[in-house]
Image (cartoon, rainbow, N blue to C red):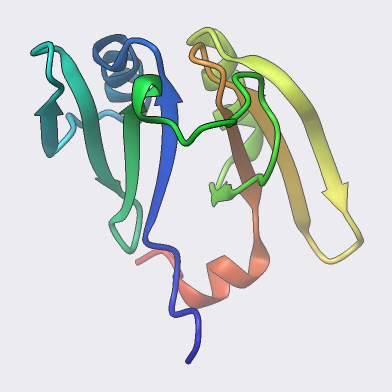
Amino acid sequence: MNLRGFATINYWADDVTAAAAWYTEFLGVEPYFQRPGPDGAIAYAEFRIGDNEAELGLVSRAFAPPGLPAEPGGALMYWHVDDLESMVARLLELGATEFQPITPRGDIGFVTASVVDPFGNILGVMYNPHYVEQHPLS
């Protein structure tokens, strides 16, 4: 058995409708799937993005596992971007706040940064030379 690749990441939000609107503006695409909760409000919205159509799901915090902290923390997943500085600037313009500044990781081209979205989730972005080797621009 092997891990075969990133499939879905879930971000939590008290207001999934607002989170979906924010991510729609940021990503430039609408969610391809939405599901209402028992009260009729959107409880889940999902986007497919990137070279492998990875799934970014926005889930109502009402469905979070017991004990999940509301403040940012835990695992940090990074999305590859080709222009890290522009991406971080755009995220900040849209109302995200800096979590970790742009930080070179060693001397072979890996550079990371992360922000907290307006809903309390850490969004990691990075320039990753290995990703570029695997997915060259056409």
